[in-house]
Image (tube, rainbow, N blue to C red; front, side, top):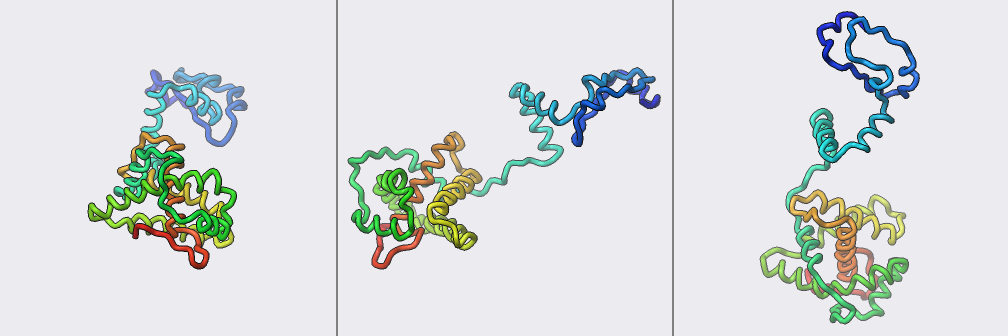
Length: 236
């Protein structure tokens, strides 16, 4: 080490390597004429050791490290959008209590089955469509409330249509079941970036409520293709 380091003798010198393992360098002898604090055994740090140290750090230290990285490299968090009507629907759906005994204002089962078959959505029929369509009467009330307050539910439906169109146009050969699942992911990403999202919701809750909204939109003929003669929509 160069002798001009004498002015910082009270400091400890450390090297962080991002290109190689520190094992080889730890075994190399170093001259230290300035007697600055340095140990080749502990002060040459590679990525493996750095990650291990971070893993064992307490929460306060991790937050300090995050703030430092954000200052140096910019925050990795996605930008927040403005408030979203879709998020308001999600939060209202979260308050709904449903049961199999709930009266369901939907087309007759033959019509729904026809649309499921037409779009080849049988793999998600029992555990998703048939189960979550129980929410449709409550969503009727939510959308009717929006209309009474002067907000057209069509704004929400157009967002759902947009998500569906993006999936179909970008991936025209994708199976409908995969399109549905990818739409769930798209909606979760969208609501997470909305300023009015309830961030106390778990990932599982957000996924569930997004599925509820998409199943309802499916029944209302807002998303996926309709067989000839199939039409149902109580809310514009």
